[in-house]
Length: 229
Figure 1 (tube, rainbow, N blue to C red):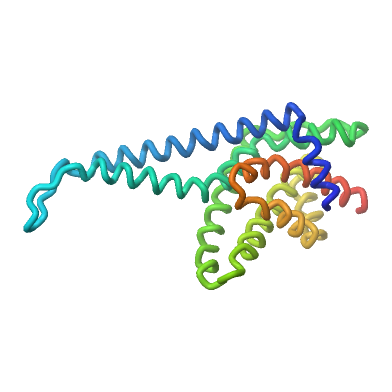
Figure 2 (figure 1 turned 90 degrees about the vertical axis):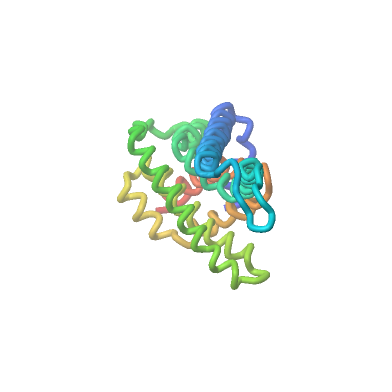
């Protein structure tokens, strides 16, 4: 498993890897900026220019205060949202990463047709929704986990990353049902590989590399498990 990860790291200089990383980061930033712009417009539309406070009188500038407060809030939320959003967008281009890995390490494999764009978009949207929902629920667990919060974070996101990325990679060769069957036989190994991906997620900037590294790592893992099967 570490060997799969190291092979992925050594291929980071690949042009297709860099392209997917760049697209993932740009699309993530564009979405976060769009969400913030919409939130800011909503604040400006519902906040009065002046409010009267008893014993104080009219107070202005509330809109500006809320705007600055929302900027601070968005910066904090972006740390939480960056990974799931980047992971979802990377899922749209996962085939490019998997193909780059196969071209370099498994050149004798026959070519496979690309997934339809609509199917890739649906899968990416479902994965994003699942990541957000499960991590939101995990916030409750964090309150009781104490010093084990990192362990809970790694376990939860490791399971999600492993499940999704392995399935998407395996579907290219085995189809959806075949991918699920292979994942079911090797769930523990896939979860462990996902934890390896999830461990660096709390490191700024490094976490932006994880979606591409994850796609490449699970491509190697799939071929190893499928060969053994």
